[in-house]
Image (cartoon, rainbow, N blue to C red; front, side, top):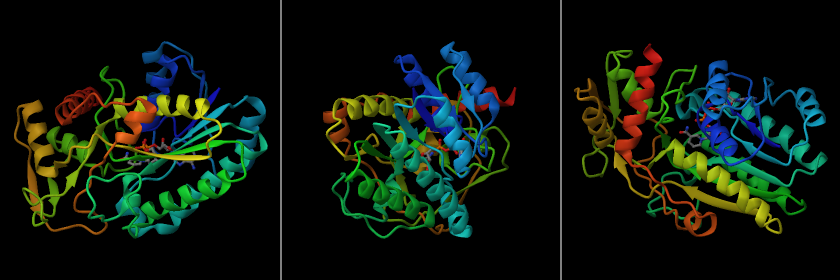
Length: 334
Ligand SMILES: NC(=O)c1ccc[n+]([C@@H]2O[C@H](COP(=O)([O-])OP(=O)(O)OC[C@H]3O[C@@H](n4cnc5c(N)ncnc54)[C@H](O)[C@@H]3O)[C@@H](O)[C@H]2O)c1
């Protein structure tokens, strides 16, 4: 059975579906800090499977141990973490505590129960404000721009150290900018905490839930002055986890692998807004504002390694991201 921590969250829920559709038995673990129980219902509806769910906090070591006593876990995909760049600047301790203690508790279970495969949600934020583009897995890491990014660097370092003396294959997947939603319209990015990622902010503004939105920085050295990001459709990202799990099982002799997951095409914030306007047929109410602390100027991936070793090729572009994100947003309103 594959344990998916944070499996009721945005990327986790889509990944659970992809795993289930590819024949894996899955156990969802989530404390519902940033997810709704309705996500679990939607996962069951979409997969037509009664996928088990345990509501516990990874920082509760005893509760976690009980899960491992009850279920035979063969692999783990670890999504559960706090993820807001801005909040991490304001509340760094909250981030270090949740993201690192949760990880360490889980790794103790990996050791104790001899779990063979472990996939970790890392982030392109580990590259910091790099000038080397596109970013490969060998690009040197620049100093992190925020405590959130530091938790991801520390997470990877912990895995690398542990992997030297373990029979587990650890894989860190460095996501670029996940966005979009399930084509059914039943699942998408639905944070209980205020959305900060660009695509949900755009959709909420388009739906009138926000009066307007701000484009942070219009004087960056990019083609239209706004930041450049590599938006990757959550369905493509979810499938990469299934492929990574398969790769980990087939390369059990390896200790630690890292893969970039982005589509390699940078899109500016203003281009993303225009893609939304095309999808929705309406003008978005946005304000051009100053730069924001913690933002990197431009980043996009070279995903050759994931293509060659995992056999992963992304299928979706920014328009498909906006189409599905907007469908999800409209569904959420009714
Ligand atoms: N979404 C992005 O833009 C992005 C980019 C790069 C990396 N990541 C990483 O991917 C992972 C998943 O991100 P997401 O966008 O799906 O976030 P999310 O907030 O939607 O999902 C994370 C889930 O983990 C749960 N969780 C958090 N702390 C927990 C704990 N201590 N115990 C149990 N459950 C806990 C939350 O309730 C939530 O459902 C995170 O590790 C995040 O840092 C996300």
